[in-house]
Length: 107
Length: 114
Image (cartoon, rainbow over all chains, first blue to last red; front, side):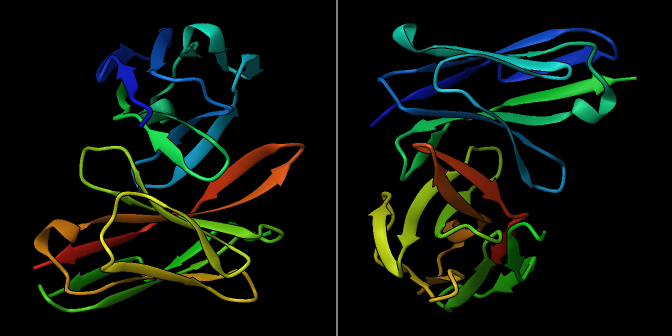
């Protein structure tokens, strides 16, 4: 099956700093999504981005499908950005999640 | 518009017992997927239901079964519980729009097996 690797596993930032999270995947996919899991366990969909670049406020994402990686950028981080960020890839019926990047933003 | 609703939020069961978890999808969504998330790991796909049929299944034993009702809500049943079944169980409903499947996740049911 498809392998999904996320890096770094843990990231600690000071409020206001920028960060880049990476997701590598082992095979071509037609579905790639980024999620944020809040401390209460809920997964919030951030981006559907099988290719190209998208931006939503302080967050943006880029997927280079031919090179099998995706990047999530967080600018001017806030304490509310803390949590675990997951990349998930797959077809239209099942998604394979990476192990996540745990982000801690300190005030 | 209500999102995905899961019940119960927390559950404690004894090894060997059976459990049923419930999921109401987001309004307008016709497909329900179930995931298991062990502590410190990413969610793992259990199965997906569409039109009351199991459409795809992940690498989980037959102790894990499910059902989808005509109103698109779904149940996840786990028989003969093991300690290793302790996890957060997430339900995601989805709809394909212009060839892309967008997922909405519920807050999950945290199952503890003792």
